[in-house]
Image (cartoon, rainbow, N blue to C red; front, top):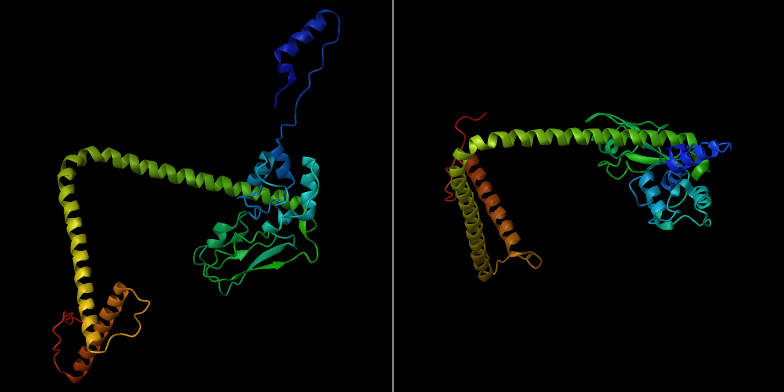
Amino acid sequence: MREIGDNSDLANHSGHAARHGRAPSPVVTVTDSKTLADRIEDLLPQTQCTKCGYTGCRPYAEAIAAGDANYNQCPPGGAEGVARLARLLGKPVIPISPEHGVERPRPVAFIDEQLCIGCTLCMQACPVDAIAGAPKQMHTVIASLCTGCDLCVPPCPVDCIVMLPVTGERTGWNAWTQEQADDARERHERRLARQRREREAAEARAAARRSASAASQPAAQPTMQPASQPAEQSAADADAKKRAIIAAALERARKKKEELTAQGNAPKNTESVSAAVQAQIEAAEARRKRLAEQAAQADKGQPSNDSGPSTPPDPHPQ
């Protein structure tokens, strides 16, 4: 906000008028500093549902003001919401965009507390902090704070959240008051501020860790540098050894498959299975048979004659 009296040209003009016996121009104070985006946001229901295609009501308002979004993309506001925006923008009233949803009675989320596992994913998704709970504890929705945004439903891994209409036949702004919209907006802004503080704190901790690591790096550099090359070589050798073992196993499986085919005992389920997958299947089957034979011999008290690798029994069973 600024006063027109702060304008030097106007001040000089007023002084000149006073010297010539005329009354100076009155000082006018500009108090309305709202932008178009501010005015648009004031007309939105503040459910923060993202159905408009934006992350919240404020980004949607800014997109409308910038001409990047149409003013009929808010289903919670319904036809009345479109009419309000149309009056502000001086445009005709148009139907709600079906691509973004339909006008409906306002729902409220309900959690089946018998099924809730306390994962907190719904709490993280709620844009207005209308869900109370703790990790591995039962969650519950504070119905008076719920905006009916639906955002808590998709992340629930056990499908224990349902949206139930609570306004009867009333839809859009007829199912939602300006007071509720203002409260939801305030809670959403508090949530964003809290998340911003948490993010800044996390970034500060990460920066402190990087600083501490950088401070200790010069002292450790002379001793660590010579050892890095052998470590890298050892890792490369280990990877090469793994690849060689896998290749050898695949080759053995291929040869075994050829032998079985020659004997007329080839597997019947290989039409849509790759060679690598089939090798894994055959190796697992061979291992299963070997373990079954060992178990049968153990039951009879006979020593195992398996020539393949096996794990010796634990001399100190628990």
